[in-house]
Structure formats: C-alpha cells, structure tokens
Image (tube, rainbow, N blue to C red; front, side, top):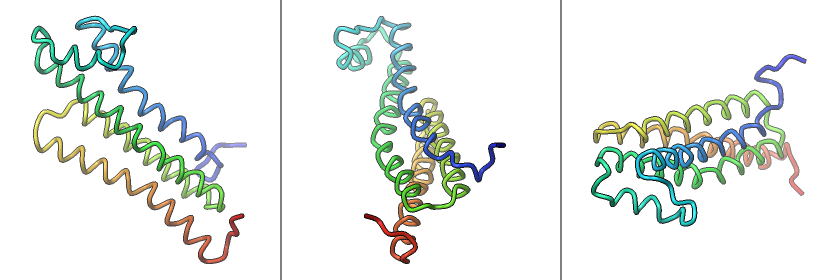
Length: 158
C-alpha cells in the first residue's frame, strides 16, 4: 500500500515532535562537552556552571542557554500536541487533515529550534515568537476541530 497524506500516519508525529524537544538538549550537552566538559554526575547544574564561567565565550554561553530554552519549550508544548493528535484520531478526523497538521507542526518545531539556536537580533527573536505562535495554532486547530465533530453529534465519546 503506498503511503499518501490519506494514510493514517499522525500518531507517528508524536515521537517525531518529542525528538524535536530532545535534540536541543543533546546538542547542548555535546557543546558543553566540547567547551568545558560535561558533568554527568550533576547534569542539572552543569548548564548554569558552564554559562557562568568567565572563560567561556559569551556567544557560546548564550547559545547554550538558547539550546536549553528550546528544549524546555519543546517539553512544554509536547502535551498539547499529544492531546491534539489523540483527540483527532479518537473522533475520526480525516487522515489528510491530521497528516498535514502533523507535517506542518514538525516543520514548525524544527524551524523554531533553528531560529532559537541562531538568533542574534531582536528581530530574529520576534521571528522565533511568530514561528512559535504559528505552530501553536496547529494543535489548537485540531482540538477545536475534534470538539466541533463531537458537538455536531458525528462522534460519541464514551
């Protein structure tokens, strides 16, 4: 069977979106390892220890903090994505809608991370914010679409 946008694939987006939240912390850890050495015995304070070190270039410390921020933001947004995909599948939203929203959301999260890692100006920070809110509209759209289907009586939720 060929894979198309009408194939039920949206559940695969959940681990893909999780990966977009996990990769920033992995990249941050590798960067810390390269510039100072990573302390796996005390991983949580390592970021603040390294970024406060005056021997670390300011740009590198700022990038480490942005990678941490991207990781935290990804973790904060994962639950609404999971809820949206599960709600959409539960009520039987069409696969095309779920798949397109999934691809756009994954792309938005990748774009968000890229802009966040590399931003250097106030304008770029606002681009990041725009990408964030644009991406956030996708799970909200799916949740409202699922709720509308239930409200219309086209799906009975137990």
